[in-house]
Length: 135
Image (cartoon, rainbow, N blue to C red; front, side):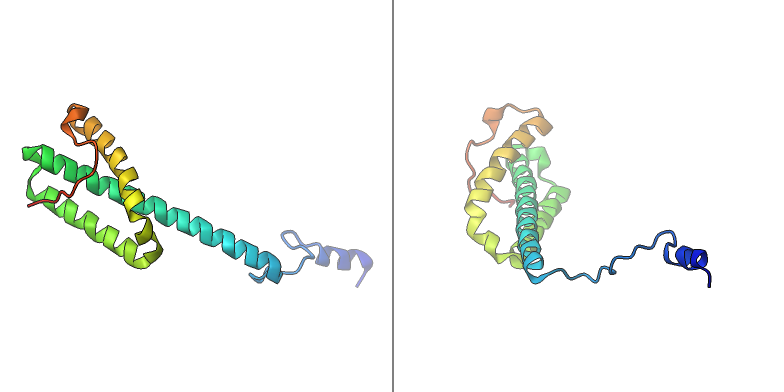
């Protein structure tokens, strides 16, 4: 084989002379990346729970403040929202300890959402969350 032929065989397009990636890094880098991934996963779960709580609380606000909102589809939506929150808490039990703070934050957002979606005055909806559920 000539020198030119061997050079072209080595420098094939799309190939590099580096080791193939096997999914592992040095222990130290891998450990840091793993912790960073866990934090991001925790934030993502927190955001998802916060959004689910916001939707549930908005549905409950509309349910209690608008008699026309008390139909079967609303009851179904509220039940579905509750089940999804239950699943999230079962998958991430550490979020249960933060639930009071998350509900307070989600309620403020839900109240604003309800005002925007219904066109009703903000004073129609209670300022703080209270125990409400469909009949």
